Length: 305
Image: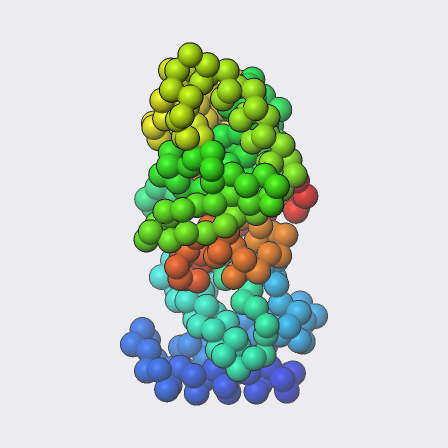
């Protein structure tokens, strides 16, 4: 494995980054550790045929993540420890901020995070699995739920709080009026998502309001016209999963939040900017967006949906 950079532009970036770390006096490790982490990344880019930092996208970042979790230790047997992988990715996140600060790139590219094998992971569905869920929906409510939870990336609490006045079909926008941290955001809807939502409002939801409280503004409602809670919405998703009769999919323990994680991963795979994903999901910090990494190092080919 090479230990030096050949590209002069990369050498300059590494020097700038070294100064960036020293000025900010980061406490984790020392400046040499940060520099070595970025040095290894830049060498990997060169070996991959990339010599312009503006050419790096989320796709390359995930490929490098795959490289880190599978590469052997330089000393001793086995692969890198989890804490070492975490440090490398943290250092690369700081590298991105430095690139933005120095206007070397116009928008941040995605940097995954490593969570190891312990704890409860957020299960992400593939594009094909999302398609399967849509194909096995039995009513407009189920399609609308997938469209808002996956297609718009709403949190469970945001799904519950959603009102019909928050759906602006003419503009192709969904308004989250009181997201996490009391933040308001506008979420763009695809034509397919807007179509499923419009059909649910005009047909199934309209029928449920007959003979009940027709002034109810809640988007997701029961047969009695009352607002659905998060548990019922999650049960609705589980019913969709069961309707697929796909054992592996059913055993994945998919929740509404997994749909949000899935759209984040799919947007990243399509090279959506980190700032767009951050706004789409309603994150206050870019670092929060970074946690939406796909753990499985065996990535499937990107498919549009």
